[in-house]
Amino acid sequence: MLQFCLSQQVNDVPFVFTATGIRVFSFEEALYHTYHHWKESLEDCTSEKMVAWVSEIGHPFLAPKIDALAKREQESSQIIGFLQLVPYFSQEEIGDISLALEAWEKSLAWEKLKDQADRNVKKGDIYKALPLYKRALAMGENAELLNNFGVACMQVSMFDDAVKHLTRAAELAPNNADIRLHLIEAFILHGNFDAAEKELAKGEHSAHVYFLHGLLTQRQGNFATALKCYKKAADLESENRLYLYKQFELGEMVALPQPYKKSDAGYFAQLAEYHLKQKNLHAAEDAADLALQLDPESLAAQLQSAAIKKAHGNVRGYKAQLSEILKNTKERFT
Image (cartoon, rainbow, N blue to C red; front, side, top):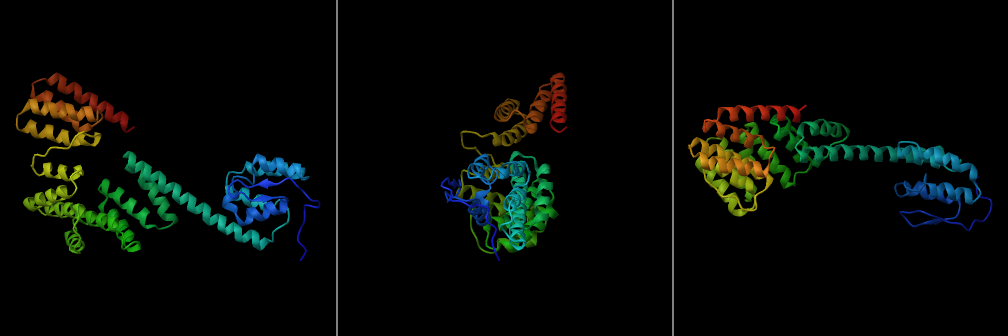
């Protein structure tokens, strides 16, 4: 079968593809390069540089067509349109590359959804992340996606969903230790203590495993054992504040390492509450003030500050601060 030939004369003006550095001297060569290196050709095939080059080598009729392709939204449509500007490839060849481009764009859409969901989780917008994870999951399973989805579900107490997603993630990546630890935590928070104990019995000893032993025994009401486990975890990873927070939760006074972080505001708000219950208003004020310095938007710290005003007998100040808290909370969530 005769192959279509657009270029009828020798051309000494090359087009250099940006990503590959390959020089081509005819439009047919440009088509061949784009077909076999389509990912690397995305930037070039509908560029102003391509428009100028086709005109310079004697094919000005292609320039407006390439300009029109550049206006298409989907990159796959731009590539296919470029490859079909002249009848160089067979329908079968176009069909093959169309399938590859479709799979690639689906993968890109999946990654975009997952990345957007991950960013929302990082910002604390869990409820914005959940539907994005769900849409990504409908496009294809992946252990990392399922893990992140499951962890996000745990953060908003959706423990049924957390166990489901993390169980599937562990099936897809059985050797991933982080996924297994997240699954154990989901089992504990879901109340499935037997499943958690079975996983914890597999013999690994790390700070986070001690933490999970602590979480499990705390949920089972064995606070003395839980405290010992949290202390072991802190001994192994002294920089992990979570292990210190959990000790404080069980009544153990702990000192956080300095410099303090914004995330420590919750600890100092709890410390303020503890001192308030002990009627130590001066210590409660210091703790609440420090919490607000670390995170002025901390709701727990604001509430403790208001409660301290009430304890001092400043009812007007207490009511005024509560009104301000309600106003700010309403604005934040509307």
